[in-house]
Length: 195
Image (tube, rainbow, N blue to C red; front, side, top):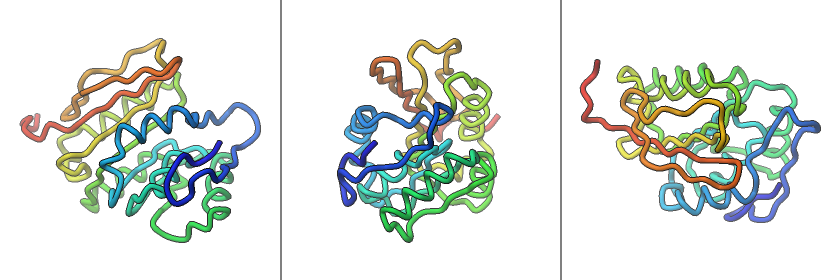
């Protein structure tokens, strides 16, 4: 794995041994950032189920102002922290080692608006997708998403379950398929009345 572009371009990233962590491939990350590149400079970015941190570190490399990483697997956290240290990234990020919901709840309470949220749970964990996207689409958590925010979910193209077209105020606007992997893009509709 390597960083595709930006300040840390071509630098290698460590990954834990074994198959318990499935990093987003270089090819898919390149495609993702080609799509969202106009949004990255100066962005507040969240990398959920961060694993090695490859997606969030790519965002830092390309000029995101601040990246929040959420990961609670010991081996993945070790790789994530090693990657940040090896690249000498000393600021502009925070790591939440208790997982996704503690980070999202904290940011929602603080009213910290975020521009881009990327989530990449284990592909078979339907509840992780449903809970996370449901939380992000809840009318009670509107302050978490900037008005033009983008939420992107990485998932298996041939998943045994289908992601919904809508999670509360989040509406799916696009699906990009690349082989066995797909990206679903969601945007908040702030006009939908709270229910």
